[in-house]
Length: 436
Image (cartoon, helix red, strand yellow):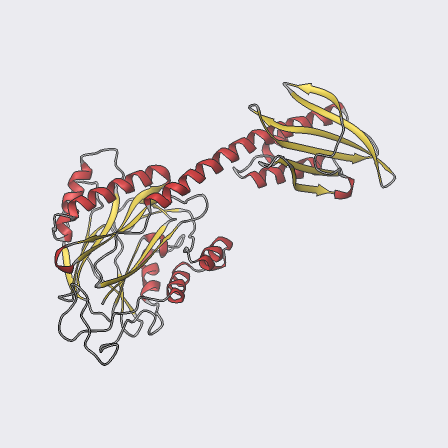
């Protein structure tokens, strides 16, 4: 029984628990084991078979007699002929905390099961049932988290029409659907747009709740039309008043397409990258202030020109980091990427046709340009794959790439080199912005 406690229920996964139960009984006592689960539709489903499957009865197709009852958990035993061989079978329901999950059937040819062997099967089944209950509770929580993610990490507010955008939320996996990463746009006066990427420390519901609070507060502060570094200063002061709030990094970029300039300010966040018309990338040197929530302040802004031929990339650390790799190496790998010319380089000057065309609202007047084309889906997929490889071979990553929902990244932990905060690997946000 000690071996059963060590080998059954090593994870909070329903399928793994069933496999461990069948494997333990097959290795120690039986010629064949079947684990049958009761489905929501009111039928039986045999999810795991170990050993000689031909010796097992069909799922739910038994007429046993009760051999013993322990705490409301009956153990049934019967004998049948299978292929001319007398087979002894034992069935125990998977029952825990008054919830029925299914049954396990163990069979052995020749001789029956002793009292000690029957007790071991009984104990292993009850143990597995408890872990099945935990696994289903976790699955229900994950479903709630998934709906919360969809509600919180929604598409950002549409920017002014003089910007073209593309964004992705890249969860770390099916157990890290919700985290502290977010992206946002805030429409300002005179055709300007404030672009936001942030990352609250940690994962799970607590980080998601703090992320939503940061997002809401930032919208209110940004609506005053302050410069990005002053927005960070006020946001930091407001958040520091709540000692329960987790620290967060944040990158703000105020784009003014009419003037062709962008103003950057960072609170402990990784620098953005700009892809030129030839597809080459360059990291923007942005002064890095302390993370939000520290109350220290001291944020600075830097201004840079930006043209319709350039594509701005903002992201969180989960996109580029690799376990055990220095962050400077990760950023250098990003800077070495090239987008396909025409996929991320943007549109050329000139008109669509022979007649005059009204320039976009808030855009540059005089010398109207064709609206730039944002990076294509293959270009974004290639960018994600290059940043997060070798994850592209992971089944979850392949599934997300095919569906266009993004790519996963590994879980782990390290200390953020810029802010000194212990940071987990995991979720990432990817935003691509382009002026028209």
